[in-house]
View 1 (cartoon, rainbow, N blue to C red):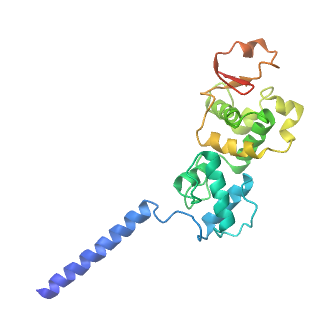
View 2: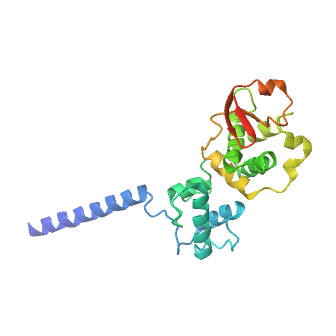
Length: 224
C-alpha cells in the first residue's frame, strides 16, 4: 500500500514538472537575449542593429557590453524601456521573431532597405515623425486598391516619387531613415492613413493640392 502511494506521488511530481516546463516554454520565458547570452538569436540581433546603424562591433553571437549598449540605444530611439534586454517587444521592433530569422512585418530585407532608401531620399532633413509618415504612406499604398501591391511596385510606379526621377534614391541613406522604415513596418502611422503627401512650397500640381488634408508634419502635407 505504501509502495503504491509512493509511486503515485512520484508520478504526480513528474507530471507537474512536465507541465511547468511546457508552460515556461510556451510563454517564451527563456527566450530573452541579454548580457551573457550567446547563439543564433544574438547574431541576428547584432546584424539587425548593425544594419540600422546602432552596432559597430563584431557579429559573433555573444551578447556583450557593446551589444547591450546598442540594444539600449535602439530601445531609446523607439520609446521602449532602455533596459538593454532584447525581450519580445524589442525583438518585434527590430523585426525579429523570437528564435526565428523571419521578421514580424513580412517584408524581405531588400524591401526594408528599399523603403529606408526611399524615406531618406524623400524626407531627409524632416523631423523623425515625418520620416516615419513617408514610410507609412508607401505601406498604405501597398494595401490600397488604386496602387501596386508590392513595395517595388509602389516605389517605382511611374511618376510616384521624385527621388526616382532625379536620382536621389541612390544617395547615401540616413541612419534615421533606417529606423523610420522599421517603425513604419511595425505599424506606426503618423500620417493618419494618408496615401499622398507633398511640399506646399514646391508642389505645382493642382490636383494634389485638392486632396483632403489629414495632417502636416514638418514641410510635408499628408492627405487622402
